[in-house]
Length: 152
Image (tube, rainbow, N blue to C red; front, side, top):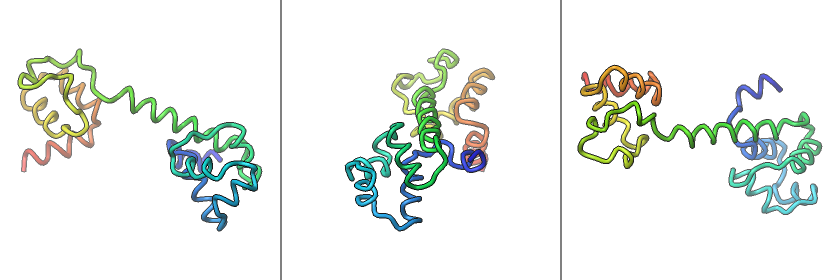
């Protein structure tokens, strides 16, 4: 499980369930009924729109012969990934001077959609600590990609 887990870590357990059901040629509706569950529940989970709960995970693992705790472990890793995503929606604004973004409200910046403009601005006008903060937020690979476009 550990090897497989490192590969699928952060993926919603419903997507793994979907793959298992397809691999075994099992229809979601019939599978749900065999577990004494509503088909809508299984469909919502396989689409990633609903969390896996412990009781259902145990039923599914037993029915498919999966290792006990596998689906709930996936759910926990997925929840961690989502929590990190929520917390890291913007860099630490206390490390960026508002004057760097004089033409806009810094709180209104969409840090993902406008990353190219943000990176260009910080790396042309920012100080060293601002460059470090933006690099930590976006990652060196993204920074290098954007900066390479500027120099071309």
